[in-house]
Image 1: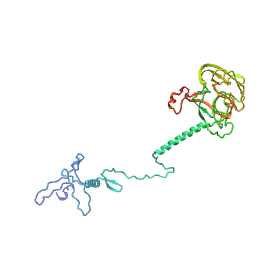
Image 2 (image 1 turned 30 degrees about the vertical axis):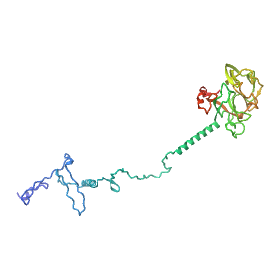
Image 3 (image 1 turned 180 degrees about the horizontal axis):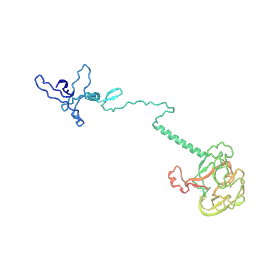
Image 4 (image 1 turned 45 degrees about the vertical axis):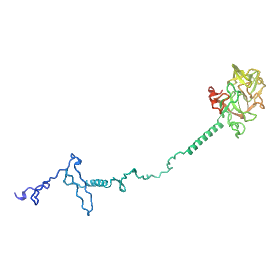
Length: 385
């Protein structure tokens, strides 16, 4: 067969090896196939070459004796990650520290006790109109004290305004309104029931609102009213309205007459009450005034100083007041120089509405024990009629 027709061996076929100078045939080395996934990774130990300059001779690669692969690589690109991994391993083995990646390049970890912290960078925000948010400051002892003082001042101011303009508390100092009001009762008076006058504020100095009443309205017969004593315009009194302007009032044999007609009076019982003369028996009755108002009364029986009187004609703009304890009350039946007399409309402070609290005589604000031993809870929040 001519040479032109001889079959050519493929390029990857094994080539015969010539004997060396001593006539010894070298051992035939056959390229091993690629390592498959079944081979464990620990069977191959390859250290990637490190790039060097042209003046330095690159070191020979270290090859494990277990398994050797001589098959050439088609794509040289995968070498780059291996080079980087080898460089990292070399850095660790060189000085015992690990590198980190940052925007400024490689920097070693600080293996000391200090923790690694990230650099804080300001956050850029858009220009937004409006107040800038502020961080609330921690309260201090001084600021807390100031807030407490402000709260107390505002509370007192609100209480003062309510007391001056709307409601005012009063304590009953005597037995003149028994059996409906007892000494020690703590009552609430409505200021605007009859309008407002210079005496309505309850202050030591009268308000400059002129004479008469602002938004004034007339009291009804039978109302329990607090008023300023006409002879001094300062002392607070509490009585029941019996006579309206133009009425004629008279007491005959311990019986009340209004405009010549006896007021309906029914005895409901007898009991005992104490006055300046000591304990005495008293008669309790139920009176019904013209207009239908009914309430309980109390007296010591006929023969008292005020059980028989002349006729009192009530002037315009005035009112006739009487106590429910008829024989133990200084009221309009006693002339103004020694008693009450007729009460001007502007002297009315307000209408008594309710009994808020009640203590027996002898209770004292300075004696806390008496707050509990002298208390009368059955009279709390009783509405007055």
